[in-house]
Length: 546
Image (cartoon, rainbow, N blue to C red; front, side, top):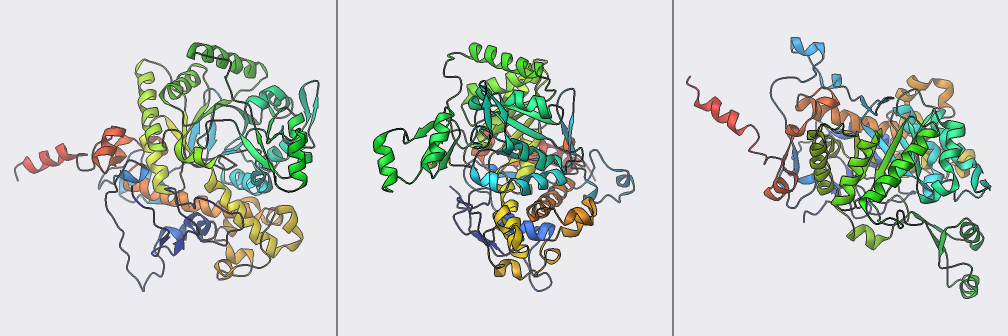
């Protein structure tokens, strides 16, 4: 297995903890003072694409074929001529990488347009998502990309009210949607997720009555972090009592006298809240199909025009079911989440050992989608998730799943701008510190070296100001500005890779744009080995007489 280095001297970045394949630390802390690649890109934007200290250094990459099967073992292919979906300037040989269009669309009858092929994955009832939601939602909205409001948000809201078995009031859900819609300008969409608990609580009905035309609704089968329902941890027993009364599993059981006594004496410090498992009453794919199509029918009767499905890193049967049923039901999007990452309190041993790793899951998703398409069926638009945080990985994901994949879904990477921006805002605007959950009292050297004002610290400050205006900048969460910087860096890097592959639109990317860098990857992904691509053309060129 290839070891992921903790630091990169060329870019001047380093990880606090052990890095995963994505480049993020295994454990990402909200108060971190830097400086991993994603953290640094929130401040520097596209500057971070290039080696540091230009003019006084040279740089050389460890450009080797890695062992094992992962996204790192795929290679992006570049070509020396041509231009697919070319801009007019290409006809004169004047095309620039900045002319690459990153706009993407997905959906059935009502298309959703995004400025770039990214989306923020489900950020649900975890407290860290709630703390930094305003920054993340505003950032996604101004960047024109979708964000998912995850499971159980309504159920854990202590200010929510259930009447006659249905949610009647949910201030937290309203806050989350309004944070996004405040900056929404027609690109992207807010997606509201439904799990078992949400369906029982009538979340779909609540959303339909208030936001039906403004959002997409998402059914949830699972996620990459775990193969059981969602969970959070709460510290006080009163909150645990509230959640148990709501119908959740609370572990350890706060209703037991011995547990309450242990909590009183501080030998128990908190409680895990778990959701029910889905589909435990069903025993065959046919039963799942009937239930699923009935749920979709119900959502359409409520008036939802756009519906999506989120599935996790289950086995091949579940993957095929998700692709088949999402296509049969004419859903707008299917997100397929590879195993590994968690934005919440996912069991650690489960994250390390369950599920199908991302590249293997995604390779099979392409195979199954191709089978369905070959039978004459319209295949649902797909989003891949599972450890994406770099432009190269995003390009590889889009190419591996082409032409079915329209978006790359990111979870933990999308949260870092919220953390960092809020920490900086808490220092520069002390009156906001408690409200935005800032963790710093002073700017650390990693930030202070860039300046002492927001305009100096964030490379994207004036870009955001141009978009929303000087007055709106007085209220914009700094985390949203950090999001702009991070996504600007990803977008510039993606444009460069696409230009090198001579692909000027997202739809032009195909599987010929990537290759396998070792024979194991070739076998598992069915991608050609790196030196096999174009080999026949090369030999024909050489066989021609001068």
